Image (cartoon, one colour):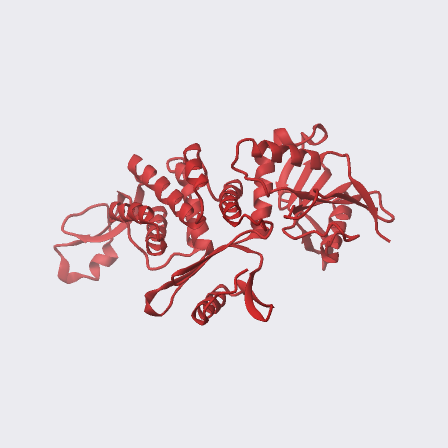
Length: 425
């Protein structure tokens, strides 16, 4: 939450919200003053010379500097497990110094692209149309006939083994974009080097996320997949506009609901052998209910209202566990834990349509909770149960042994032993 924005900052923020199509920071009244509160987003908002870091709402430590550094490292780690980054062992030192994690992301992109480019820029054959004094490749006779005054030159199409291809054009565009945005001298030098080396690659005026999603990787350039994922991350989450006086105003934000889901799904998939108890060890893990499609109804013989649990555990035709991740606060003092009725009804639909014995709602543990929540709601007229649990991400996920602690916690959550049962009347 921030309350010291100038009128100019507020105008820039409103313009960014209009560009994004949704409110980035919510204005509220606190002690007679207008303050701005983060919604479901995390990231940074740059308003001219001012940079606002929006941290996950689970962090409310009095040690602000410690919270910022730890939350920044955890965000990077979560992006790695969600499939957006590929963090290597030699990247950990940079993460330990992370304060402005947007600059750390730029550093990852620039250093990894530089390393790969020095090993050999990705090349492939591209069809080139040209008018040459010699015959080369395929002679385009219809085009030649439209130029009778140029009988001494040939309209041809030939294949050129070049770096000027769709993949490199995406990298070139992102390099240019980040070069304009970075305020770190080292990052700017790295990006300047890349701009020089990529001079032969066409710089397009604009590239959208959809353009990057159409790029097909082959076994010859598969090593560029992590860099392409990171480039798409920048394309997807950067909302950019220029204010008066050419001062850059932009937002680089993630929907924390999606990141929380992506992180826990990726973590469970990567460490399934250590996390899944024996009773679930043979299960397939199906994110977003892929290959496990169920609908609630039919209309005119067509199925409607598809159900998509965040993570489905399937053992042949049986669904022993469904998981749904909610980046929301729970209230341990509330009889219903603060779970919204819409979320609970959604879980009830999952339980009955998949004929599953148990559905688990997973929430983040927040600062101030005395203990993790492990609750089970027994359903009236049904043998199934809906569980609500919290997972502790308040720890430094990059610290030694931290991932083992998280593995142990998730394994305990997936065990059959339940905490206090709650029956709603």
